Image (cartoon, rainbow, N blue to C red):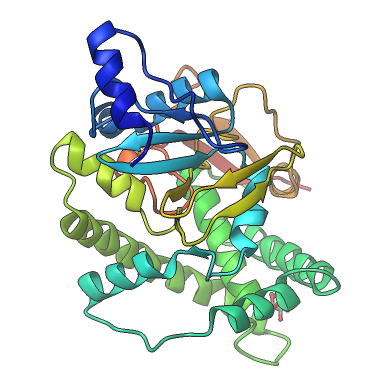
Length: 329
Ligand SMILES: *[C@@H]1O[C@H](CO)[C@@H](O)[C@H](O)[C@H]1NC(C)=O
């Protein structure tokens, strides 16, 4: 039994905010909340971002909270995710959730895949000497899509900032990862068109996926919502053995066996006002290729689409309209 239970009882009696003080050496700070067993489940389910921001201010980038009887260690520092992602799957398991989701949503049971071999493959293709090659391909594919001459010099075309960037990045990423359809020189134009087709199909699939994920993981009620969040497949790891975790800043923590580890990249850096990203290649390519302006410069930045928590990088709830046309050179 965790120290929370006794603590909660005592604190309810004396009206003291609950913070586990009896943590084992090096474990992340434990925050049990006021309500026995439930802990922070309600606040977490109601507004995860606000809750996590509050916890971040109180404890920093890593902490353990009690959520409906579970102890969930939240890691917010995206620079430290590498250690988690590359940790062997017999120490931090995430296959369990991916499997449950696959079974419930698609009625598919994948044969046990070799996670170690898969990681080795990723390492060899996406890191080290292969990375510059991949980056060059990505750059060329991005340029090809942005140079697509269906965008005229004379007439403005309207789109959403998000939808535009998302589409272009996904299409360029698709072409870069899956390669060209043909060896022939004129293939570039065909690839650009093909990637557009793939993208429209992908959008349909994505909408279906979100719909059925919501059905499966049923998010009625705040308690269900917090359970859903802490089990979201792409960000959750089950701690299978006591595990040292070194953060990017050098601090070392010990994760407790049986706890759940959640990576919540969305409140940092996307929501961290102190981070001003460098202008990136993408923006630079845009400026080279297009003139653009906001349709309504006074428009507010949209909130995050909360229904997508746990499914990759968060998307905005709405989009900001802008118009663009090709630069005349
Ligand atoms: C896009 O990427 C693929 C695979 O990396 C590459 O074969 C192809 O040449 C790239 N396209 C362009 C236009 O450079």
